[in-house]
Image 1: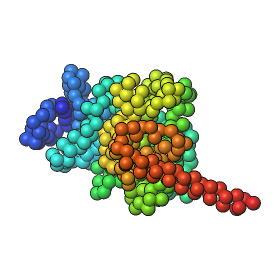
Image 2: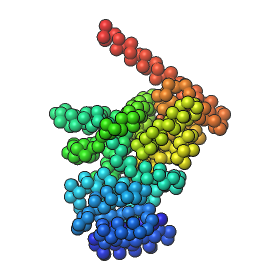
Image 3: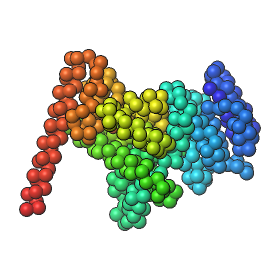
Image 4: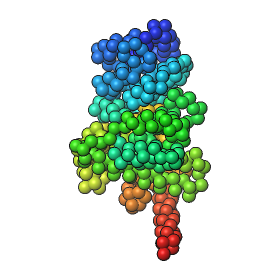
Length: 401
Ligand SMILES: [Fe+2]
Ligand SMILES: [Fe+2]
């Protein structure tokens, strides 16, 4: 792996190189004293990771990462910063993948880079790696952005009320979790739910972020419509997953994590849709016509499925492992049929959201005894959800009469 460290302090560059050299044999480390030198090096050679300081004269870390994102989207972009001012942190948030604070121990730096690349080798296509690298630019839906801005203006705005709106956009949720889990906020425990992430970020920062949100433009209508359907599906799966977690009497931390994993389970599809537009919509259409799971055709067309792509993106963004594992496994029968796992619940929620009849064929190859038990659990959950819905509509009718 080839890593480029960028800092205007030569001593720091020497220390970083020494640190990596003594800890690791198979990383090749280069250094650059400025953003301009970093770009020169990047344009001359193939790098996998850029780790940059924020405050540098002429071109700062945020400006550098903007260019790296545009020219070399497949490269992992890490900020390693001392005390950066709020404004430059805000600018770096958009193009960066990970944020680390100085002083940073070799273990943390190495572990962060290693973890961010766990799924990298499972994706062999450069165009898909580039699509994932540019996922920071995926636009939001205009309605969601309007709702966020209106809520932020309201006197009754709370983390809970904002979370309800932000949950309508899985990419935005992932971004909030990425930031809340970054060293910018120095939280000790991993944050797995959106409401908690928003309360860590605070209303002022969310307001600043909301201003910079891009929305789908008018000439992206087909992609925006397909994204809106995917966003709605993601929200439905998250809601079903939370209800199933409640039925299973899971603790609230696990239930919240499962809700987030439900929201993010198909984020890989959003990456594909954003990057490939019509080409990906054709794949979805073909899968529907042939009645095969979309991930099978994604593998043929892109060499990777949306679960692997989603897991790699969330890994790059430094989200909690529990969420990443669940997203990675949501179409893997050997994992999903295991009773009591978050993957089983997200699988079931996805199945119920699709009408609760097809898709079980995906479990072909699983051992028969555990498969029978799994199918029984799925059907029982579907029936319990249907009974709850019925009871709810009866009660609602009584109130309205
Ligand atoms: Fe999926
Ligand atoms: Fe799904």
